[in-house]
Length: 196
Image 1: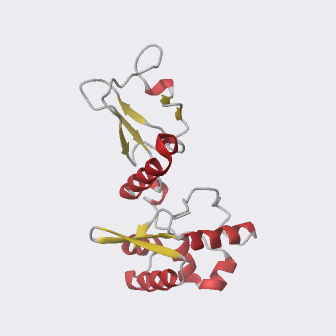
Image 2: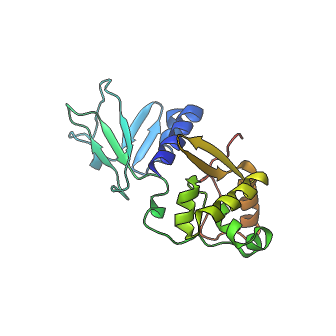
C-alpha cells in the first residue's frame, strides 16, 4: 500500500508537477503559485507560516495519522509531512468489494471481484488475501483479464503488481454510468488513466 502510494504520487509529480502532487493529498493542504499551504493547526509560529529555508519537505505516507496530517517542522529535523496513503481503508479489511450484477454475468463472479479489487494496484497475494481466494485462482483470473486487455502488470523487484488498464477503467466507468457498477465508487479520477 505504501509503495503504491509513493509510486502514484511520484507519477503525479512527474506528469503534473507539484500542483498535481498535492491536489488530493488532504483537504488541509493546498498548493498554488509555488506556495504550499497547510492548515494553521499544522504549523508552528504565531502567524501559522513556516519557511523551509531550502531544507526541502519529506512526504511520508502513514497508516497511523488518518484522518489528519502530522508535521515535523522544527530544526534540526528534516521538515516532514505525514499523510494518509491511498488504500488505507483496505488495510484492516478482508471483505471483497461488492460486484455489479452485470459485471458478474459478463466476466464471472471471481473475475469481476478481482477486477474490482485493483484499486489500489496490488500483487496476486494481496488480492488473494483481500478476497479470501487461493493465489493460484487469482493468478488465473489475472492472466485472463490481462489477455483481455482489462489489466496491466508491472514488475517491482520480486513482485508483480496489477492495475486497471485504460480499457478496464473504461469498462467500469461504462458499467457505473448505466447503473451496473459499484454504487460505492465514483469513477471520476480516483484511478488514473495510464497512457492517456
